[in-house]
Length: 197
Image (cartoon, rainbow, N blue to C red):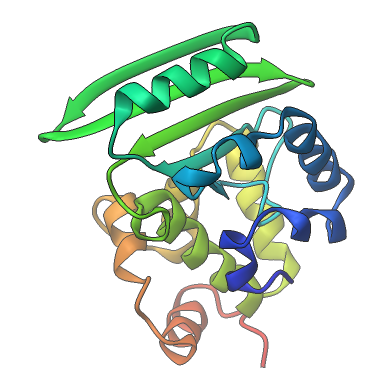
């Protein structure tokens, strides 16, 4: 399995993964996204890095952005000719956020920009928690997650359902971010009963 540190050190780890992960790597390399956006510390998050993607999964890249006008100029310049290109900017609870999306090589690619370090953004934290859980449990759990996603359930709600987490699934998973492996194993043994020894 991919070490957590690899997630914020580029995308080379994808080359050691599944055919889908390798295709994602080559797609992103063709676009030079990580070079173009280097100053924004881009990190690929979501289901593809942790190999729980389904057929219609997209490639989500989070960025640390403070000057949104400059960011828009860059993404417009490089990606505005891509199929389905769209750029939106809004304030969410007073925090500026931008989303740029387009299609390339059968992928929907989405760039998420916030004035927050990538490794502190919720998308990254959710992925890390999910990755750690997948490392601690047998492969049938991964298959159950994929099955739920294929039925239309989003990733975080799928994890919350299988782990029997109450309340808002996104907040509930965030609470697990600082848990130790031992604490996660106790949760898995209690709710799933299939943690690896």
